Amino acid sequence: MKNFILKNRRGGDKILSMYWFGVLFIIAAGIFSMVYIFYASPFDVREIESSILANRIAECLSHEGKIDAKWIISAESCSDGNECPAALENEIPKECNLNFNSEFEGQQNYVQIDFYEMTNFKASLLEEKEIIVSEPLRTVYYGNINLKADCNIEESKDYKKQSKCVLKRFYAIDSNENKYIVSVLSATRKTEKNAIL
Amino acid sequence: MRYSKGQVSETTTWLVATVIIIFALLMSVYAASTISVLTKNVGVGSSSEFFKGQNEGDVFLKESIFAYMITKDTEGINIYTQMTSDGSTSPFGQSFGLSVFGKIYDLSKMSLVKINFNGKSQVVISSDDLVNGALTSENVKIKAHSFEVIGSEK
Image 1 (tube, rainbow over the protein chains, first blue to last red):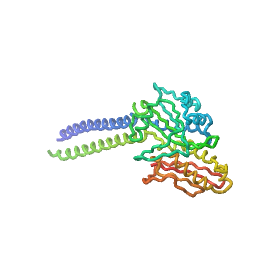
Image 2 (cartoon, rainbow over the protein chains, first blue to last red):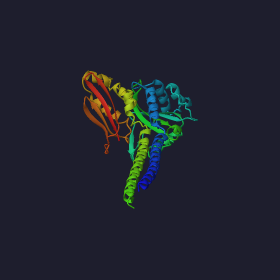
Image 3 (tube, rainbow over the protein chains, first blue to last red):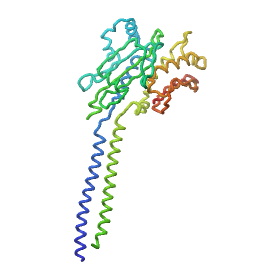
Image 4 (tube, helix red, strand yellow):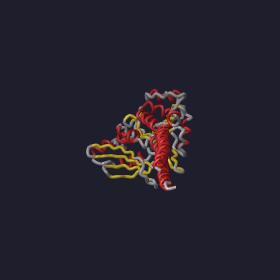
């Protein structure tokens, strides 16, 4: 009888050890999957990048509330119906000391600046979406213009792989006391680094 | 047969324990995936505290306030001078403030925009669905007078 009990206990211990190994494996697999899931997706900083870019553009255009004369002169010449010189598009990186290069092929950013006359500026809401009714005096842009389409889509639905956009406005005056509303649209792609591993 | 009841009881205990362990792990895996989604999308709203810490604030609002302060009325006196000399903001300053700060915000994203003149609030934009979203504010204090713009996102 004594021998039987001892033999039986040994068998039970063996099964229990197997079970413990099983539990250890389950816990290890659980911890592994938790860590893997957490670190599998990269940090998405595109919205912040777009916001920082928009801020730099705003600081470049306006100095303590006054727009630099070079932007205004161009705006006036364009408002008279004259075509804006193509070279103006390249003013943004040059004048604002911005480097739009990245480790990826092609332009990964898009910046668009719209100058509106403040007194004529009008925006209205249509199906919870803001629409600017006024025509800009002048539009200056730089970068990959294809990204602008993503910004229009983003207003209705936010997809993970599309570019992240920031659209903000500020009020500024020029040296002749003309009042302007300046709208800055900034878009960042860089999907490979921020949305896909 | 004499030991079978004890063995069944012991097996049931371990079985239940295993189920609990697996359930706890599955919950943790689900929590890890949820936290990953929530924390890894570093948006402007969620990281606004970061910008505050850097004294960055709202650059667009700051530039607008600077321009507002140097805007002159029909007599050629700017709002800044009016604030420092009159002791209160002039009717021009107040009406012009409402006009300017009602135009710089995206109407679809803001639930409330207020201007405070020396602590007295004036509502610029107010939507039906007032939600306490991310707050943006900038203020200017000149002697005893203060001017503040506060915006609340939807």
